[in-house]
Image (cartoon, rainbow, N blue to C red; front, side, top):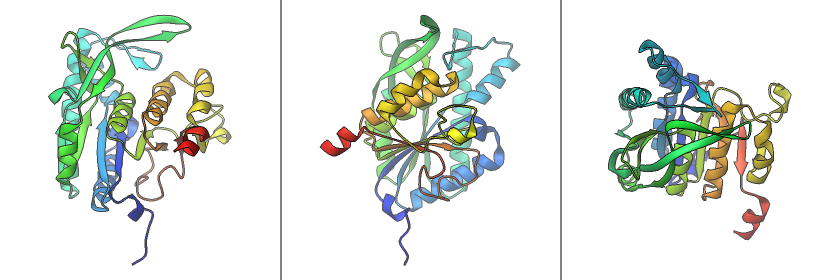
Length: 282
């Protein structure tokens, strides 16, 4: 039997962050779920981490709740956090149903269950000034026991990006890219795949010719001030994951059907790696 690149992933842990407009396209969601099940059947220990940005925005509008973003992060009020919680639970339920229909054995895990994600209130900087984000959290620790238990049984953990404040117990909204990165690092994953609505990371957006194929964490740090605000949390998550021990991060276009299995990870997007010094030392 011919060996494929998928065979080389057998036994490896891969965290896939699902989000963006692919989540509101039924055909893309179905192809995503089919890919996840195919990876699991190939022996990959695959974990899905999801947000719900488009759905949360839509539900906030329908309930008449004001929403805004600062530094690429959603400002989250006490009214909004209830919407975030409801929407993420619904998305988790829908994803597990679709994964089951595709032949998988999914297990939905809310990020605030079993102490999976613990966090503290976060702020960000906009134009050099510190900005309050409300009930937005920065993950301080990840308890992987329930995720690992699901993986050991051959299941597919489906994890939502929400957490509890370690000091107050309040629900906190967590950026899904950041949650996926923290989870990947805690699981010692070989790959973190960040699905987005563009082909990858661009050095000079919107110049389509400036797509970056490979980049180190050091180079990412230099690029950060030049990035669009919406890309900053994704790039920060990629950098943090690599520094936390993840081997590779791929930023890829989630609008492409079957992008997870049609080609080796990152072939058509951007792959983030550790600095050469760390690679040589290891």
